[in-house]
Length: 263
Image (cartoon, rainbow, N blue to C red):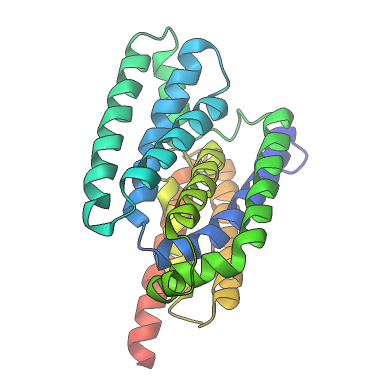
């Protein structure tokens, strides 16, 4: 399996994707933004469709659309009372655009399948390098903002009282999530990207306390699901995203059962 170049690329990309998904997922769960990750995955689909339409790499289109939409949501939906409405409006706009771009594209069926469900075979060395670079940007961004992001995510009232700019942190965080969504969609597809950004972190919080420990365990869960999905996808020729989603759901259900038994 590892003698095949495309599997080497898939496992390298998958490893970086799992790491950043585990880290970002902890903050996504803490900030109660699971719905937003699902929305960004839909917007990422639209961006990829746009990229295909004008001849870009799908990842570049995803980055463009998710980054723009994140700024819009961050500016318009800083108040939690209107955040869901703003997210729904932005999502509707970009989904409509995605359907339009696919309908007038000459590569509709194959490109749509790849965008929605991911494509292990289609990952090139150039795309792997791009994924690694974007992952490094995300990690550096989290490291630089770690204290403020941690404070704002787990105690937003206290953070605001201590002079932390909630809107600035929110927008920067949304930009980091957007990059994560765009990167991770290369393996698992835009339909199921929220799986890696929510379930590993949600599972980890039932086992450990403390942000650092949650991140570490979320990364382990994300790596297990990703590596298992890639291996089973190779031996069965079934969609990798199906196996990744199934593995993460099993881990999550197991964590719930373990928590109920213990407490």
